[in-house]
Length: 170
Image 1 (cartoon, rainbow, N blue to C red):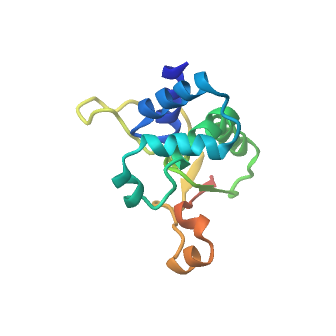
Image 2 (cartoon, helix red, strand yellow):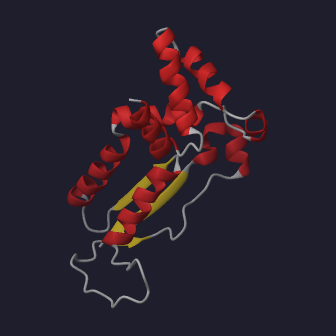
Image 3 (cartoon, rainbow, N blue to C red):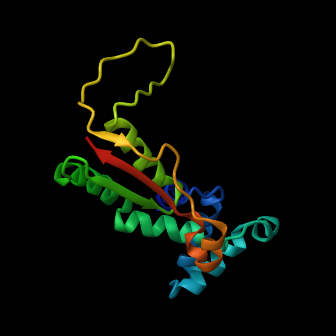
């Protein structure tokens, strides 16, 4: 249980202190049922070094809550399914616009766009180029993601981590 929880927190929340957090959660659950998010948040906060809490702009429990939410809702799996389905139903010259709010989502979108645009990537430049197995279906419109402006972030602080990527079906 502890190892699974730590793996989830690390994989989906990219939290460096996942092992410590998981251990503390399991220890506290043996003593008493964790009844609300504030209680869980306080447990997590105790696990992180004070200097990290002061340095970071986000709440200490954010990554852990994010990881649990992503895992429970299978958000990354849903994103992959949505991208595949959108490619099938999109008409020629239609656009796929995806706003991602964290790096795991953005990586999936970026890889999907690259893979379906015929962009090659290999594990090593020393291997011979392999022929593409899939036909090119997308043209990438935004080589780099579009990020919110400073004024937009001031008006809407939740947009600070948003990244917009756009591709067109060809």
